[in-house]
Image 1 (cartoon, helix red, strand yellow):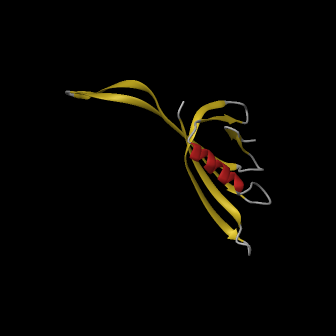
Image 2 (spheres, one colour):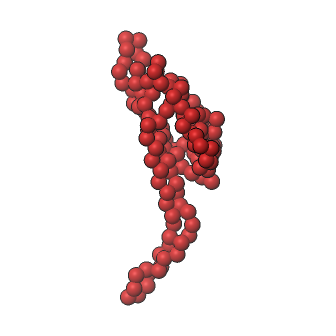
Image 3 (cartoon, helix red, strand yellow):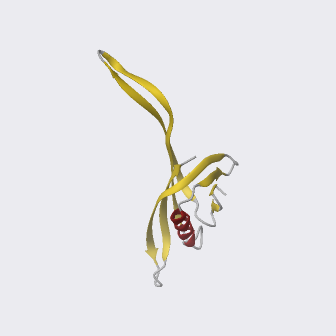
Length: 124
């Protein structure tokens, strides 16, 4: 298992990601001052997002139903704990978006390759 979002495990058998990007922001308020740079006050943590990109190759790694499962989790709109393989809890995240593209179709119309990208945002 690479990471788990709630009960969904990102792994070779479901949907393994090849890229993980994390963005963390902090909030600062500024007050203009005459003849000087604005004063800045730290307001606390801002948004935190995680982007996961991967490839599903049915028969070799992953299955198409994994994306459908993630879409169903997104439809519920619940915040889910995000835990990595080392047991580190990153906090509760919601699914903001899922992008997918299919290629390498066989005669039955099934794609042999599905690229996906998932955008998560921390809410707690």
